[in-house]
Image (cartoon, rainbow, N blue to C red; front, side, top):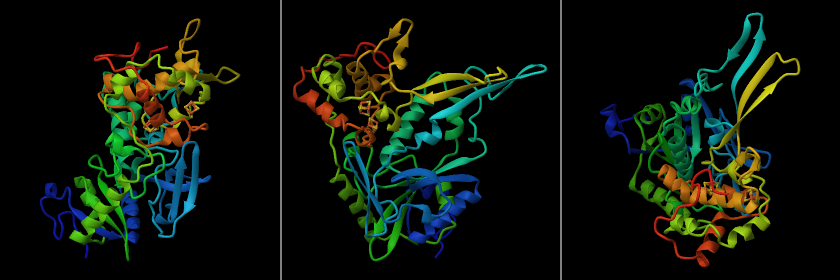
Length: 410
Ligand code: SF4
Ligand code: SF4
């Protein structure tokens, strides 16, 4: 049976949102091909260099079938699983940020010519075009609940203020999102604490729950009209109660297997009231200020701008690169860096993420993905640091706010 957007026949499209259909595992290929034929570049999980990363995919055989990951503080290992699951892992080192807000991006290039200089890419102080973003629209396959929350946070930061980042806007435009409800919690996940997962609630075109029963199937929830239109070309069947119960059990089981928890009660006030807590010295003894945590974090957005010229002085290029509050240069003002010590840099990062971000953007800057814990080479754990401060903290004072909230604070 071919299930159309409205069920059995085409009908009022606004009633299709929330409808659930079951497809066989092989039908995922139909979705990938349908996205390709609509001009989308499909990006999804695949194995590379001993990790599950996000990259361009054209076939379901490229997905990490039968692989899982074991994660702990400072540890990441791939493991085989016997059930052939396509999405039987947590999140890896990549996030969708690398496509929407890339690690390195050319802002403009200038070449000396007979007529003066020719400039490519610039269009005003905040203008320009995102290379590659106009040619291809992105379709993301396998977006988790915490990752949808992270994209929403970056939207707020990069598009929601007085200055819109036009390059991010171009890359974000028309994204087609196929989300996946998590069937496997990672050892460092704490999305339940941050209320971002393991089930996705909004912000997707289609949401999959992988059902590993006698048959390998997916329950597909329609989240948008274009999601319904894409699904209309795929063979499926209407979901039965048994399918809905099985899907609910998948996310319920995942929710009880979180590797970490974070007590968020009064956390903002707690951190802002304990800027001189001795735990900041303790963590500074361990922190290498390597910046790994900020590079893997799906919400960290800071960048710096660098100019390069060739030796002949014919070509100049301006690039934007991810930067980090863990580097000395990041807080450099004339005469020196504001945050000289590892203590102040770690404190800046954690208090911004879990406290001052709320003052600045109205939400926590953490979605509970656990990447900063897994990919910290010395295993520093943001949930453990917060718990340690809570255990021995002075009581939060109402209205407390860190000096230089946001990007300041030495
Ligand atoms: S907390 Fe870990 S990952 Fe982050 S800068 Fe320190 S050592 Fe590096
Ligand atoms: S702070 Fe850590 S756990 Fe929170 S969103 Fe960033 S990487 Fe994920």
